[in-house]
Image 1 (cartoon, rainbow, N blue to C red):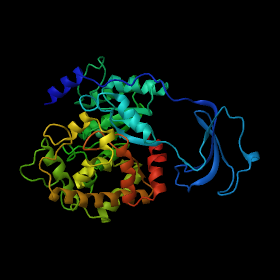
Image 2: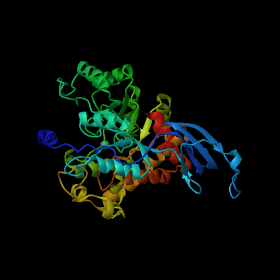
Image 3: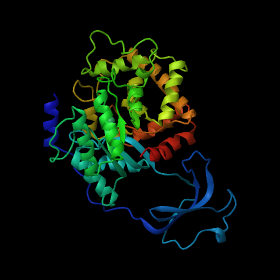
Image 4: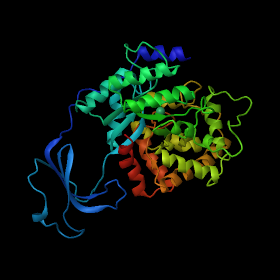
Length: 428
Ligand SMILES: [Zn+2]
């Protein structure tokens, strides 16, 4: 199965974005006039303001009056080389999506598709975990930073063992190779590592060396390794971000250590993988001793939680996900084909999905959301990531759903925007 996947990937890789033929800027002195500003710190909206941007830097935010009163032209910043009229509009920082993939054949063969859906939703920074294969992820990042393509700003994270042709060591199975690999990706210009639930000695080596090389880290603590590497174990070793929810519940079980799987459990059967994982919701005690201790330790360790609630949301109501208003106009037929129930496509586990599964997920979300909201209320950093491109979730649209889900979790809209802007930027 793995061999087949790798050879298929070598044969067919995603089409890089075409050279940029649209858009303008950066400008010598851009002034955005008259809008209402939401700055992303949690501060309330204020306006009208004129915002001066010189090159790529905001140099001045000038309050130019009060609502419903004509603006005194004398007070406005002058000497623009370019202007945008934002009267009657809101202005906010671009959204940061900390968990993306660009897709690839057969489902989404052209990178431009994801890039434009991201930009169209106001997402101006993305963290690829990874975007696609090693070389292309880094070359697209480079082209984006030089303004050669129409794409958000890109931060490129990579899986241990991945590399160009000049990485000769293969997969990472021991601490020495782990450190070698981290130094290798730092040389290659990567921004960080996307980790799994590695055994403790390898995890420690990866995270130690990443600190030396000033690289970021985010981990999907997969069920296959979570029994020896849960979120608390990883955070204590210096992990930067826990993405998804894997390893969180396992860090605060009341009466279990390993999740009590059914005897016929098989991780490779996605009906089991995604049907069973929600059944942790009643293994923890919300606001109990372990819950509170975990939150406190995460806060002390400065751990970022990047939940990507959107990518599991179909689990609680698959009909809702399948009937999204945007599918007709924006979802590629090849994308739709990939979503369609199948034992092989990742995240298409709907061949035996019942209300019994959906109710487990709804309960799971309630507990998960409470945990995230508690962390936010203590001053913890909860960010936005989408992981779109699977499970009926489309690039851009999934990120917006993540904002909605944060609000459902108890975040005020200004807290949602802070998660999606300032906290995302801080994490990177
Ligand atoms: Zn992912």
